[in-house]
Length: 297
Length: 314
Image 1 (cartoon, rainbow over the protein chains, first blue to last red):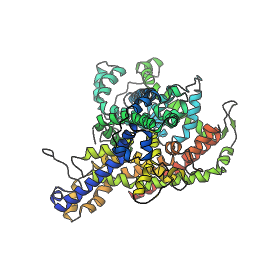
Image 2 (image 1 turned 120 degrees about the vertical axis):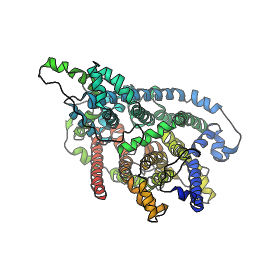
Image 3 (image 1 turned 180 degrees about the vertical axis):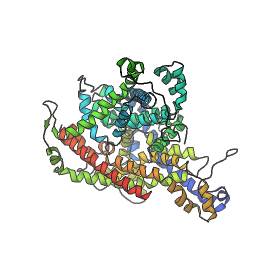
Image 4 (image 1 turned 30 degrees about the horizontal axis):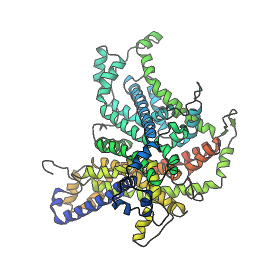
C-alpha cells in the first residue's frame, strides 16, 4: 500500500521484513480469509444458487447443484407473487421505519431534557432510565404483552397495530444514554450564547444541538434499524394478523407449504436487501457496531 | 475511537447561572418549566408504558393470578411453587446452561483470536471485517431456516454430505436428542461471532503502542507481546462482552423456537421457551412471570458475583 503509513501492532515494522514472519503471517492471513469466505460468504452463495435451481437438484446433490448451469429465475418470481415476500418485506420496512422514528424522537427529546435543559427533576428521570438497563428484558415480556392488549388508562388495544412494535422499541435506555452522553460533550457556551441572543429551547435543539450530533444520530439509527429488522419474538406476539407481519415472522409459517426451491428463493430475497445495504454502507455499519461495544465497555 | 464516541466519558462540570427562584407559578413558566416538561413527554410516556410499568407489573404478576377476565388475585408464592415443581424445569435449566457453556466454549475464543489477528492486518482489514459481519446482518429467522436445510438428517443433507467425504455420519442433527443443542449452538455462534469480533477490533485499535517497543527491547516475541501487552489492554471490554454473552445466551429463544420448537423430546427446550409456553400457549401469566422473575434474579446474582470477582482481577 503506497503513501499510507500504518500504526504498528504487536508485529513491528522490522518483524514484517523478516522472511519467516512474512511467511507465517501470509499463511495465516490466507487460511483465515479462506475460512471466512467459506463460512460467512459460502452459505449466501449456496442460497443464491439454490434459489435458482430445481428442488430435485437441491435435494439430490446439494453441492453438485452449484456446478450445473441451471438457472430458474421463475423461483424468484414465484416467491414474490405466491409466497408474497414483497408484501412481507413492505411490512418489515414499515416496522423498521416506525421503530427508527420513534426511537430517534424519544432519544433526542429525552437526552435534550436530561443533558441541556436540565430541570430539577432531571436527576431522578436519568436514574429511572439508567435503572432499566440493569433489569433483564425477560421480566417485562409478559406484562408488556398485556399492556399492548389493553393500554392502562385509555384502554386502547394496540394488538395488530404497528404502534405495538414501534413504541416498545423506542424504550431503549442504552440508546437514550449514549445520546445523552454525546450531548454532554457539546460545550455549553455554544447554546448559552444562542440563548442570550433570544433563541428558545426548540431553536437551540434544531440549529445547534442536532447539527452537531449527526455522528451519534447515525449510530443510533443503524443500531435501531438492525435491531428492528432482526427482531422476531416481539412482532410474532403482537402482530398475529398475517397481513401485517414482517418477513421474519411470516416466513417460518408460510415457507413449509411451498416447494424447497421457492422457499430458498424467498429466503434469498429476504437476505439480499439487508446484505446489499450493508455492503453499500459497510463503513457506517462496522463503525456503529464497534462503537456500541466501546460504549458498553 | 471515532467522532461518534467522544473520548472523555465523564460529564463535564458546567457552571450555569440559574435565575433566582421566586416560587410562583408564573416565574416557573417564565423559566421554561413547561417547555422542559413538553420535551420530557415522549421519554416519560414511552418508558412509563413500555419499560417501567411492565417491570413493576411483572414482579406484581408473579404473585398474582391473572386471567384477563377477573381482577388479578393475590396468590402468594403459589406461582413460584408451581413453576419450581414443574418436571420440565430441571431439563430446561440443564439445556439452557449447556447452551450457554457450549456457546462460550466456541463463541468466546473465536472472536478474540480473530480480532487479535485482524488488528495486525493492514490493507485487507476491511475485507475481513465485512466477511465476518455478513452473518450478523442476516435476520436470525432467515439464517435458522437456511441452516435447517443444512442440518437435514438425510445422507444428502449439506453437512452429512461433507462429513460423508471423510467417512463420517450421517447424523440426525436436529432430530437427535444428543446433537440438537450443539447443532443450534454452532448456528448461533455463526450468526453472532462477527458482532463480538468487530467490537474487539474497535477496542484493539486504541491499544497503546509504546509498550511494544519496550517489550521488544526485552526480547519478547510476537506471541508474548500479544499475550502480555495487547490482551491485558482490552481486558475491560473482553470481561464485559463475556458477561453480556452469558446473559444473552441464558435468554436464548429464536434459535431453538424456530429450529425445533424445543424438541425432540424437549432436548432443546430452554427457559425462555418454557416462559413462552406458560404465557402464550397455556395462558398461565402467573407462572410465566414467576419464572421470568426467577431467571432475572439469577442473572442479577451472576452479574453481581461476576463483577465482584473481576474487580479483584483488575
